[in-house]
Amino acid sequence: MMFDKIITLSLNPAADITCYVNSFGIGEDYEVQNELYDAAGKAVDVSRVLRSYEIPNTALIIAGQENSRRYFERLKDENVQTRVIYTNGRIRENTSIVTPDGTVTRLIRRGPLLYQRTIDELETVLSEEIKPATLVVVAGAMPEGITDEIFCEICMFIQEAGGTLALDTRTATLKIIEKLKPWVIKPNYEELCTLVGRPLNGIAEIREAIHQIAALGVKHVLASLGAEGMIYTNGEVTYKVDVPELSEIKSTIGAGDAALAGFIIAHDYKYDIKRSIQFAAAFGTASCLVEGTNPPRRISVAMINNQVTVSEI
Image (cartoon, rainbow, N blue to C red; front, top):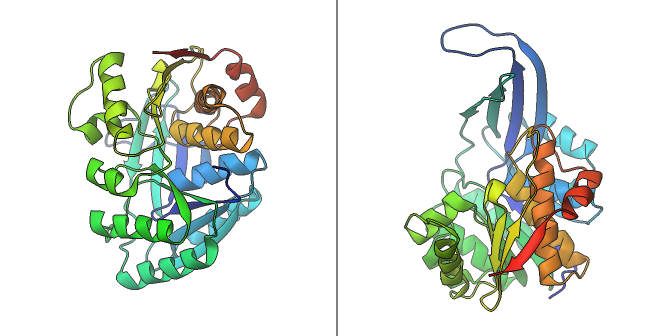
């Protein structure tokens, strides 16, 4: 299936603020030596990576109005096309405190509570935006007010409007996945263990888990394993993807989002599945070479792509 339009849906966007300090402890004052501000959240990160490769897309965002100005100025700077539904409250802010030895301490704030009127407005906007052959990427943490039932209702509305689902959220349980049968799902290792309800020790058990998910009707299951690469299945063929070791890692936040975006870009380029998951792994790995949650550099993606190996298992 080829897509004529791509929408990323962010129900709970985040401003990622990275503060670099010389040292950090409890009960002391520390001067921030440098600071980065990224307009982020998993779905928005996918939009940013797609845009960096000139893949047209619209980031549909529900945003708390109080602190939204800087957030959307940053997206405008990156030429990310947005459609925004404003609500009361603030966009959540994730603050990472980074010391010279690479230790990261994260402070996670909550986003706004969503009420039914906002969900109703969202469905109106979705009905306007979604056309046949539209891919809708639903990713990230769900805000307060979005129950599993409401999440499933939103996703089913997307499908009834003609959209195809790509999911990357902890909210997607096996029961929900079986009902929705998304085009692609991209859990990381921890999310995969949570999803199937058991610890997964070794590639054989991970392989079994992704086949369990594929059997529910998911067309592509792409599990990211950090430095161990990826494992993929479409229920018929299964691949293990190995990535090169990096000499320096600047940030792993957003690596999974970059991998999902890489998979979508490869699909847009009409790559075969083996080449697509190689490309996805290259994106995820290359994103670790940039500060904050910025999209990976093209030259890094190209260099790493040449070092990624894909083997059928």
